[in-house]
Length: 285
Image 1 (cartoon, rainbow, N blue to C red):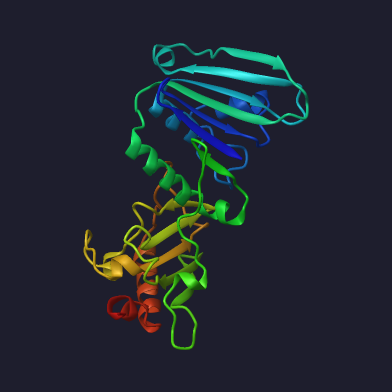
Image 2 (cartoon, helix red, strand yellow; image 1 turned 120 degrees about the horizontal axis):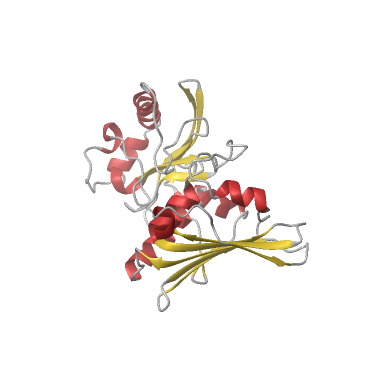
């Protein structure tokens, strides 16, 4: 469970989870900028996320964590201005707690960026898109200001236009680009589901959507010039799983190598053309 709250009165962002928690050595490692985890094969790779995100939002942030099986809760306070001024030691507090408790709490204050109504709405949408796989699988209970977030799109058969034989206009993606597998699907959304908001290709890597709503991948050879709002850009959708590819340190883009992107676009366009996805998306009434 991950519960995020933004208090507009106190201007404090609070993120609470009930995961394993961290012991002292794990917390220390996590507070070094650019120090990767011992196992970088998961979603944490570069050792940048917490520090850059929290410091971008606010000049003061506090991490409180309690690891399952450990006897103490640890709290560390990070003052960005003090660190920029040369302070190298972070204040640490330790409190005895039952060994069966486990959680991490992050509070960000002295904010540089505030969340108004539209920003809160967009934040909910981005989070639901980013963690769509966890939400669909029931692995994650994610809430923002007590609102439970739901995945923006469910790729069930009834989300797509149907052929005369009752099968959906949806095709599995299964190829290898540059020696790396790419899987997923592309399809044509039916009326009532289709929208520019859900169209385009979402890029999923290691269980996290690195490019999706609001800025899904729309190759020009398939979707046309950017900014168009024709039927292709309202109906054609897809999700591509690219676990073997490299992502930017901000985890919002894939760093394509050589001709990987061009080769993948050609494959997707041929798949969509051969199975009439582009034709149906353009012409169905």
